[in-house]
Image 1: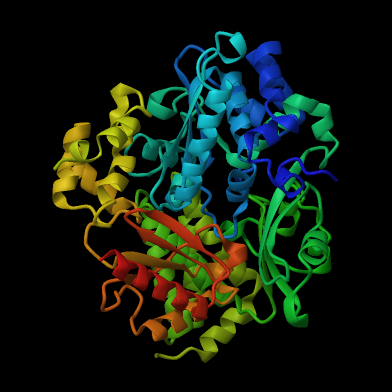
Image 2: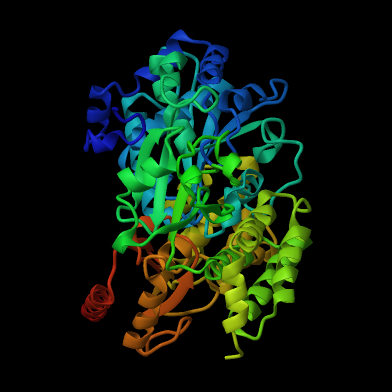
Length: 419
Length: 168
C-alpha cells in the first residue's frame, strides 16, 4: 500500500516545495478553492468518514458543518500539542511532510470560511515551529497562502503559536485559552468551539494527522479514501508503537489492522523472547488490555477496541511485557497526571494528588490491601466529575490495573516496606 | 532596555500574528523573547511584557507559573530535561538518569558547579520510540537529543563546556 500520510518515506524530499508540487501537491487546495464551494468540501470530508485522529474520534466533516454561520470571523486551529505519553506521530508529519499538513489546514480553513488559522504547537516543538514558519513563507511566495488565492476572493494566513509545556493544552478549550494568552485551563462545554471558540468566535480545532488526510480526500474523493479501513472507521491511521517491542516507531496502516499484526509483524515482537502482558492502545490515558489471543486478534478501530476494554484514542500503542509489574506502570501514569492536572477541578487536582500518595505507600512504604481498594475508590470518585477528560484519563490505568492485574498489586503490598 | 527597544523587529513580528484587539495572545511568544538572554524572566522583563500587552503583572506572573518552560530564576546555562515517562522508562530512561546523576555528581534539580547544566526530569516529549532522550533548553531555544547513552551525553556536555569557554 502506498502511503497517504507518511509519504516522505517514499519521497524523502517531499518537504521541498517543488518536490511536493511535482507529486501532486496543492492540487487539492486549488481544486477546493477554484472548483468547489465550502459546503461541497465539507460534504466530501463528511462522506469520507474521516474521524478526529487526536483521540476523540469525532467525525471531522460534521464538526466543520457545526460552525455558526451567523457569527464571524471564523478560525481554524490545528492542534499540534501532541503530549500524550506514547504519541509521536504529529511530530513526524510536521517534520517530514509539512506541506501536506499545511495544505490540509488551508483546505479546512476554506471549508469553514476562515481567513486566519493558527497552529498551536507544544513548546518543546520549538524547532518544528521555526521549520513550519519557513514552509508557510514558501507557500505565501508561491501563491498558495496570502491574499486572493488562485485569483479568487478567498484569502488565508496561517500562523504558528508555541505553547510552553502543559499537557492540558491538548484539550481543545484549554488550548484556546492558552492561545488567547491565558493559563491553559479548560472551559465549560457546551458551548463547543464551533459556536464559541477562539476570541469567542466559531472555531474548528483539528488534530495535525486529521488535517493531513484532507488533501488526499479532496484530490481523490471520499470513495477512494473509504477503500482503506473499515465501514465505520474508514481510512488509514498512524499507530505510534512504543514500549517493549523490537521496532518501536510510527506505522501507517488501515484502521482495523489487528494488534497482533502491528506488534509482531511490523514491530518485530517482544525483545529477548519475553511474553507480551498488556497493551495500552491510547497512551497513558488508556485502560490496560490483557494481552490474550483474543485481544491480539482484535482489529484496531474505533468500534472494536472497546470490546476488549479500552479505547483506540490516538492509537499510541504502548506494549508491556511480562518482566514489568503493573503497579510500577500505574505509579508512572499517576505521576504524569498528577503533574499535568491544571488544578481547575477539585476532583482531578486533589484526586491525582491522593492517588499518588497511595501508590507510593503501596509500592514503597508499608501499604495494605485496604489502601489498594482505597486507591481504586479515589479513582472512581474522580470519574464523571471534571470539566475535561484529563481527570477521567488519570483513572484508566489505575482502575483497569487493579481490576485486571490484581496479583501484581497483592505482591506489591506483600513486598513493600518502609524505606 | 525594554524588550521593544532590544528586539524591535521581533516584537513587531510577534504582535502582527494576532488581531490588534487581542494582543494579549502575544504573551507567550514575548515571554520566550524575554527569556532569551538570561535563560529566565527577570521581574523587569515581566513588567515590560505586562505593560506592552496592557495586562497586570499578576496576570503575566500567572502565565510564567503555569507553564513549565518559563523560568523565573537563574539556573544552569542549559537545562538538560530527561523524559522518564512510561514509554521512555520501558526503554531504560530511569537508569539513564540515575547514571547521569552519578557521572555529573549532582541530583535531579541541581546545577553543575560551573553553572553549565541543570539536570531536570520532565514529562513526555513525544519521542517515545527514541529513548533514552532529553531536550536541552537554553534562552536560545530547545533541541532534542535522542537514542542517547550516558557516554554520548558526557561527550556532548564536554563539547558544550569547551564551546562556552571559547566564547568567553
